Length: 220
Length: 197
Picture 1 (cartoon, chains in turn purple, blue):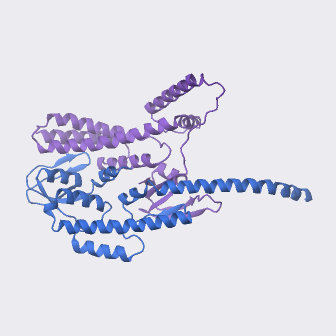
Picture 2 (tube, one colour):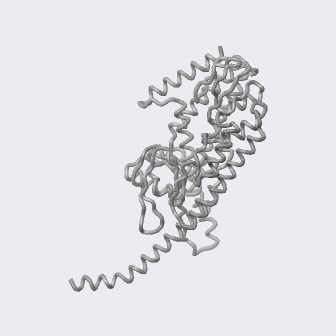
Picture 3 (tube, chains in turn yellow, red):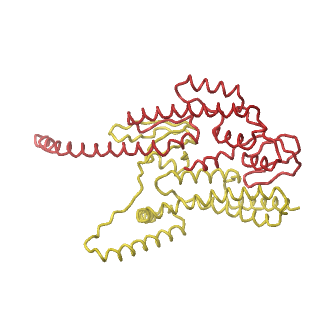
């Protein structure tokens, strides 16, 4: 009986999400996507466009599953397994969100400036609403704090904005056949390379940052 | 990345088990598993297999490649080949560690298998070190790492990318300086050029 509850609850959610999204994408695929998003965020030097829709979808799933879990008998061996899966997904999501917060804390001024530029150009923001609010508050409190400290040593007003090193080297795996990626080797003569599906390379992030954002490659 | 996180990703690979119990399927968010029928083999994610094994509820069937003869061949091939050969599994080292760790009683000749996998890992690591050395000497800014597994990539992550980043920094500074000095030399010559025209 309890199992049927979980099954029907899951089916319901699956149907719901199918209605919302035009693109049909199964839950295992979403988890796969979440893993790739997590790794991308982990290894890219700059903050990437947020994937909150995936996060929220998975969180919904987790909450439903957890409420259903409470109904399940404690002695059932399946409970442990369900709980383990929930824990695994939770880890994935929280590690992803934490990594983003970490980047926001380090590069907050740079990120806020880029976000401002993006909204002026009418592009989508990279930060989610909550992250943006966090970034602004964080930035403000850092500046306030800095100013109050600096009152004791007048004359120093120059501050340098910390921005990510977009030339850092990353490992990636290609999901498509891609031609003509420019390798910036620090000299003026730049080579071109082609990637085949499944190819793994070590390359400067700047050459492939667009491919990461549009999902043609993912970082590993 | 923490090796545990590589393990986390590796735990998703599917593996065959023989359950010792009957049960309806489990409806995971990541896909259904089961139904379980006692002594009928089925494929489950590695983390499920390990959990069930710890509860003594299944036997793990080792993956095809976890066989002394095949590993012996693999090792010879890896030795004789200068580049990296394709591993039978993207997460061979994680799978070996987890399966041999929890289900040593299901696998014949565990100790020998453990040794030979370690040998393969060592051979690959030493190849990796020498190619890293070459790469830094040539100060290349690109490398194909096709047949490397995630754990191997992760093992060089603390060193190689950062070394290359520093090289890049030096090179691009040099370029900037060169451009600047060339610029100051070429400006007058350009000026004379335009003058004659």
